[in-house]
Image 1 (cartoon, rainbow, N blue to C red):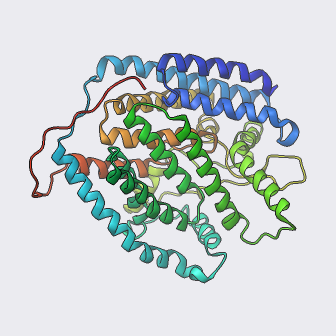
Image 2: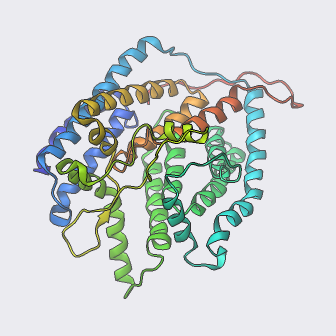
Image 3: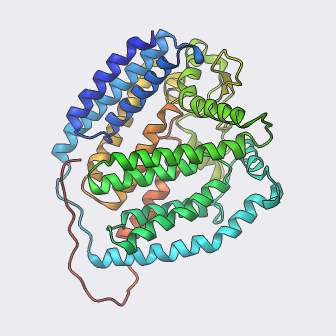
Length: 427
């Protein structure tokens, strides 16, 4: 049955590619990642549990609605959004580069403090299972109310500095090396969180950011970044997931590692089938109002917020350990709001992210960075909902880059230069 749904997904993909003329337009990217996932599941045969027709119809309808929302947004945006490019003065670029340099150095010097705070309670550097314990503590506290903490937000700041460095990369040797070096603290902070996701998010975001800024997609860069993502993700699995595991030989490590990577990619769509067949079997944990409830609680309210991590469910009938607790974007839309709610939410999300994408084509720093982050969330739709659940990150990015690029500048002694221009062209 899965094979029968590959053709309509391919048709949707080709239609979106012809309309948007870009593989990184949100609708095209969404359909592309789901086409690849459905195709991979079909090719895996009996390795994973089969998907029901109803589940496949949900995936197909969701993709169709997402495409329609994107087309509607493109039609409206072409008429309402100015086609002129966002142009920043050379003084603004110089100021932003100086600020980013200072923040980069600050993140480097603050890294030991962050590491001590994170690893101290779990045995420090001497413990080989420290990152596993960090991750377990993070999962256990995911539903608790938190307050703003400067040290904890150093991880967020390091990501924003890296994104800013890549936006300011003008191709010169000096700026290029700054951009690459900025990844080091960002990756270090992300790794210390005990999660495999931050490093992948950082790499994908700078890739999309670079493409949006250049208005072109580089296939060689895509392959290189994907290889880096798989490599870093695999290393995270060995350090975190397999912290207490024992292996008989190198082949055993390789086979189990390959299975875990595959289950992270394909497990969500398979696990969601259980939600479709028995909605009450997996309680909702990733509701779209989660950000608002947590914000209200931090201001003194007392709303109940469940743990972000859902129950585990088996995704394969083979002898390999095959439980997962991720259920795709539809876990937040279809399960809580049914068919109609899913359609409306997908339509709204697609419309908004496509408008943001159209704005990013003007080259403005805020829209480019936010769109790059949103595009990563679109890829992760096979894993979980990342539009509403990541609002905290998106709002922080909005405030940071708006203040950096449009806020008041501290006077810096520098000779006045002419305004910089930006090239425009098809993506």
